Length: 427
Image (tube, rainbow, N blue to C red; front, side):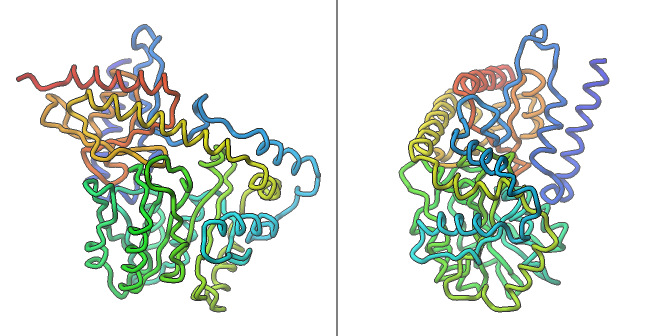
């Protein structure tokens, strides 16, 4: 039985390696890799008493540390029990939800969005796919960050859009390599994607850097797609600044959701927003194309959409502050523990989101071939799940999700340390 399990798990690892050698980022998904790694867990470890600690998935509801506010649950209950929202919503979303999201996002902008700028999506994932679909055309290419979020590669592969990766620079706080953007862009470049606050890196871009991104995008003649699913989850020195602030410099598509800030990822309430005070997206053909595409889609449940105005209006700042304090605390635990693991280096202390990237020094390990091998063996020997950097575009790096219970996080990091000591190269 054990031999069969090992064979299956080795096959799983080999599948990932094969994909990596071909075109991994267009086929690999985070959930897919994590499920394969989960298969490597030895359920009989320590007599079956060693609990699994997952530091791989960015789902804050899996912890006891983060809680959805009661007012948010009440808003949905009120909407459902009103018996007014059992039918279909307009394809672009309920008007009251679009108005509430426009007003919410406008708080941080130098201009006001209208409800016509907002389209409701099934989470930020659907907003990503909509943005790629809207920009796809024969010969088109799109500039994506490396490391990044693999759903973009998956979506572009389905749409036949060429991906060109620009690097994020760890030595500069994972800033965009703007020289690379200028070198990669051409007349067929339809968009520049940024993720801020950063997933998987935990970075937060400064106002000045976002301004330079906007100016660069304008110079190369493309728009910016700003993934802000972790919007406002910034706990370092730099505050969160939405890319839409620079909508008058370059057109911006803002993608976001309730998922992370309100701790409701399973509700699948997201948005696709045109930040474009100059009016590029208001051309009749562009507006009609967006509206027609949304006619093909099904949005989130109507009663969830109907609750959005109450959710935004009634959530108190103290809830947001507590989430930020908790993330700062767990990020500190992670960074402190990593200092005691010689073969893992954190080049940049996270300042936002719920995850961070750390670099493996394989020269200090004896029988670990790469990041995928590390994660599969770690799962088998220590029942700890982390994401290999290959999944997000960086070989021999690791993504650690720190949105976890402090005790579980501390225990998980200690197990990683034990694993690294056990596999340390003998001098």
